Image 1 (spheres, one colour):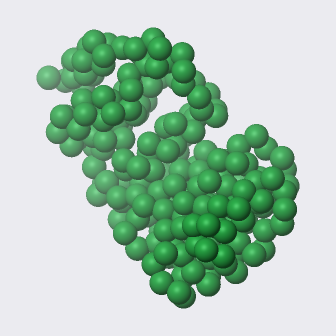
Image 2: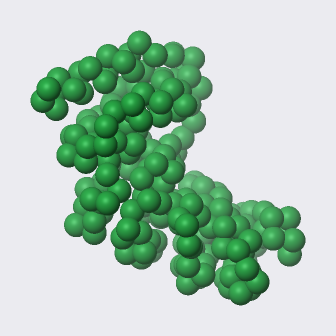
Length: 218
């Protein structure tokens, strides 16, 4: 089947699982997709994982303004083929916090070029969605780098100082990374404490301090 036929078949499977109550209860930051059947994430993941890995098909789905197809693309994509040349393509499709979090979980944390992606997406001008995805993915990679702690703290401070509504999401992303780092060994823990120690007491920054107080027993 061509991509259009395959997409139609997949969309039909999702349509059969539609749930208006789930759609009505969704909470996220950012822009909604044009079409949303309200399929739950566990169901969506099961259906998407039944598809064979196909990076080109995944990119075709990623272009669609349909929530279930865009999320499914993250599970169908081949992490080995997501190279720096594709960072902009995938980053442009991060419409909201739900998609960013799923991208971190399903795809970004598994790519070989993740250090390069983190450096590009944690930059101050990358935008909060890319920053959030980078932080959440960094917390899931097998060997997170302690060098990531300082830019993670800087992102939280920048968002807190600018009073953007999504600052608390970035704080939670940073906490996830700090916890992944700080629980590995004492050297990493000290790197996290130094980075977190640079934060002040604005609401998002205070959130980081409060979470680390019990997660790392500060």
